[in-house]
Length: 496
Ligand SMILES: *[C@@H]1O[C@H](CO)[C@@H](O)[C@H](O)[C@H]1NC(C)=O
Ligand SMILES: *[C@@H]1O[C@H](CO)[C@@H](O)[C@H](O)[C@H]1NC(C)=O
Ligand SMILES: *[C@@H]1O[C@H](CO)[C@@H](O)[C@H](O)[C@H]1NC(C)=O
Ligand SMILES: *[C@@H]1O[C@H](CO)[C@@H](O)[C@H](O)[C@H]1NC(C)=O
Ligand SMILES: *[C@@H]1O[C@H](CO)[C@@H](O)[C@H](O)[C@H]1NC(C)=O
Ligand SMILES: *[C@@H]1O[C@H](CO)[C@@H](O)[C@H](O)[C@H]1NC(C)=O
Ligand SMILES: *[C@@H]1O[C@H](CO)[C@@H](O)[C@H](O)[C@H]1NC(C)=O
Ligand SMILES: *[C@@H]1O[C@H](CO)[C@@H](O)[C@H](O)[C@H]1NC(C)=O
Ligand SMILES: *[C@@H]1O[C@H](CO)[C@@H](O)[C@H](O)[C@H]1NC(C)=O
Ligand SMILES: *[C@@H]1O[C@H](CO)[C@@H](O)[C@H](O)[C@H]1NC(C)=O
Image (tube, rainbow, N blue to C red; front, side, top):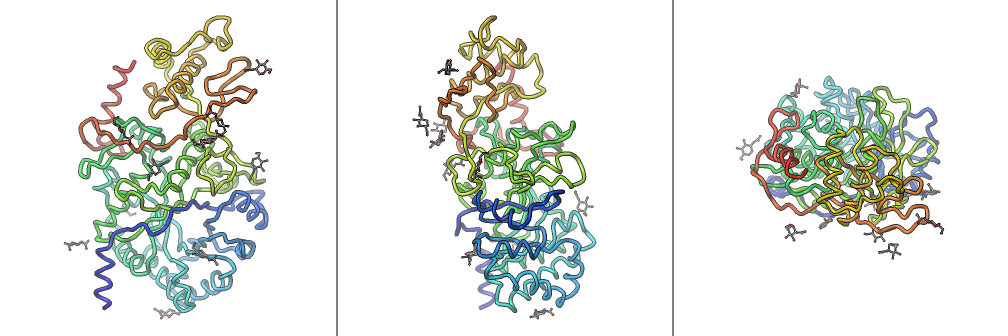
């Protein structure tokens, strides 16, 4: 019977038995950390129904009682060695931090450690014991059905992540990964994965296009194709998740779902982090939230829920490291949004979704010659009415190529109904939610201060994967760049 059951589990595939949700991580490294009551008030106002804590703070768990908010609590890395070495310590931890709070506080999972293999490898040998000890304490309290046990991994344990079909877990960790996956499978738990397209983009030396990292709509000829499966990838997020599914299936685990325990984009960075901007953070998180809530799934498992926790609720001003490290939050310590997410239509979470409006502008730092060429194209073959740019007209000032190109790009974008791929201009254009209008120069798409907005479409990832170009593959570390991307670079010559 047990054998039969195991067999059934082994052959079953990941199935869609529930809808994906969006949660939010709550880091607490703030100089003015709000009180638990204030945190819970913000969560309620924003209709955030799922959170992850990095510990199991008692005051926080008490404040969350009877709110209906689902909570992942965490065993911090500094307690992992103790718990992994002692069943009694694990049982104590569960008694104090879980049993004492349920059912009033709805604890749905325990994250045991954080990115242990990549940040605390000396604890790796006890990681699976820690999972098992925590789980047996839950069994003893009859809580193992409602509280899942897992451990969040950095996606950097996945090697050769593109094409996803060739990805595998760093084999150094097989002695941990194999028993861990067995544990997740036999307990009906899920793989916790942290997915950061921001870092994939930053570390790719230009191989990963920004739009592909930001889940922006791509023209079909810019999609990345996995040559083995012929699956089309329109964004890094999907590619990393599929790489994880394939890595698990190489170890013969095909039924373990994935929950993304962290993903996000910083809204501010230092001089070497030029793409950590409010617009990019808003674009990434808005696109991600819409995509997750739509149960879009991934190319390998379309329609399969990949619930995702946004990193993170607050900007953590006390965190060390580059400026971006302090700027992943959706809110500042006083609960003021860092930006207003661009979410109309998805309802449910992060209630303050005020606008559908997007504009197309010249990308920061774009080459002036390429901007000029794109401007000429827009005002010529692109059939944009560029008369407001003439001397003495409302949009003549400032008289520079960036301002003029922005006007022309935005006019073209709206003229084309903001269709996918129409704010591209060979990579020198970008969309923004900030109205670039100034003075009497009103940009297409803006009603100016008089407020007659032209209704826009959502910035939705393209699902139309018409294939053009020869299948090939590329890797994010730049070792071998796809003919598709090279094709795109060449395509510019035709376009301009
Ligand atoms: C706790 O959360 C789970 C998972 O979302 C849900 O099924 C359950 O009904 C919740 N329990 C309570 C008491 O709200
Ligand atoms: C650990 O403790 C639990 C009770 O909390 C018990 O059921 C289980 O058998 C113990 N496991 C080991 C390996 O000692
Ligand atoms: C695999 O993991 C080991 C141990 O952390 C590390 O030393 C090695 O560099 C990793 N391999 C790759 C290719 O990243
Ligand atoms: C996976 O299963 C196949 C077929 O049963 C077997 O040949 C292979 O060795 C297994 N791989 C692992 C890592 O267990
Ligand atoms: C939405 O934003 C406005 C202005 O920023 C604020 O006054 C309002 O309280 C917010 N609503 C919610 C539900 O947070
Ligand atoms: C806004 O309305 C005022 C008065 O109704 C008008 O004078 C002004 O031209 C309008 N501005 C735009 C950009 O339509
Ligand atoms: C935003 O777009 C959605 C769907 O396209 C539409 O239903 C909604 O009315 C729009 N909202 C505004 C404020 O324009
Ligand atoms: C734009 O959206 C608003 C609010 O959703 C609606 O009242 C208006 O009729 C729409 N306008 C057009 C031109 O679709
Ligand atoms: C939502 O899902 C439907 C079908 O499942 C798909 O056609 C649509 O493009 C998706 N929208 C987004 C924003 O992903
Ligand atoms: C995809 O694109 C093709 C060719 O451009 C078009 O014929 C088809 O209708 C599109 N499909 C969808 C779902 O938009």
